[in-house]
Figure 1 (cartoon, helix red, strand yellow):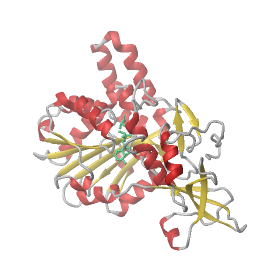
Figure 2: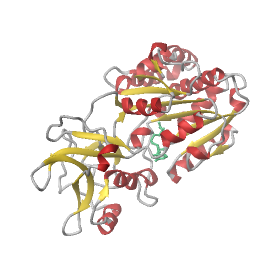
Figure 3: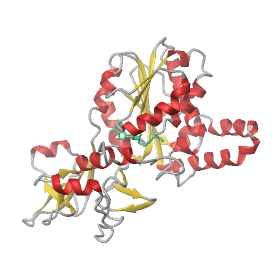
Length: 382
Ligand code: SAH
């Protein structure tokens, strides 16, 4: 359905176990897009993140921490400097959102030991919805000698100084989509995307339901829409509210790194299976579904709660100002045999036109914290 992406080709459609179940169970009014995405990604039995090795060199996609250890190390040092900016509290929570295989946290912890007193002050919390991923994280962090917890939500965290980090987490959260299109009665109006079942009960279909007056308040719909225009709305659950609540009781900083845009974007929903894009209804549970992050909208939500927003800046600017080049050079000098690999990894993270610019970083701070490292101070809004 992506306007420039693949269409829904019936010959490619796979009746996966999850597709079969959905065909039997989808109610007459259809499933909202976010409910469909949640099911495809996190269903206990057939969800994408519970099924197989999706991350890393042998998986479907590779993320920054899996590309280079320098990424997690720099974020670990970032956390250490932020903690010092909080006045080096004797206890602090370090929370990672969607930690995948735990690689970022392992690298961050190794670097964190270089900041005196930091590592000892930390309680580590991993917010992870997939039991399979939780297992991988436990294995990766077993030797870190830190007590680990997997809270069900950020609302369960202790009210103490808190640092939250999330790499490629927000893009994995479900979205809703609205499109300006002709309704059955011929009138143009905004419709919300749903997933339904065809008349034979054997195949999933895209459905668009007109958005009623009251529901419109939840959308930021443009005033002069044109036919086919798509607006997206992320379903963050209570993430923003939970972060704001923590920040209202103790110092808090949060860092999100993800691919996304700052303003103006249409349909960004994508399904990737075996390194190929496909229509999101093609193979439920077997494709990675994700959407670009609306950094402008995200920043706006935090500003509404009185939190300071640093950035967004590109990943290349963020890592560059944290000293990625110096860190990589030192690592290469220490490991000459791995120098080419280290250099290639860093080049990939920084690539103009690639990860260096498609990915952005945004930092959130509670009022009164010094500007966060890695962001130009002129970019702090509060
Ligand atoms: N941060 C890791 C992994 C990114 S993939 C990295 O950079 O390598 C997205 C991660 O978020 C996976 O671990 C996935 O299981 C988890 N996840 C997806 N939706 C989630 C949700 N709603 N709540 C918590 N974790 C979620």
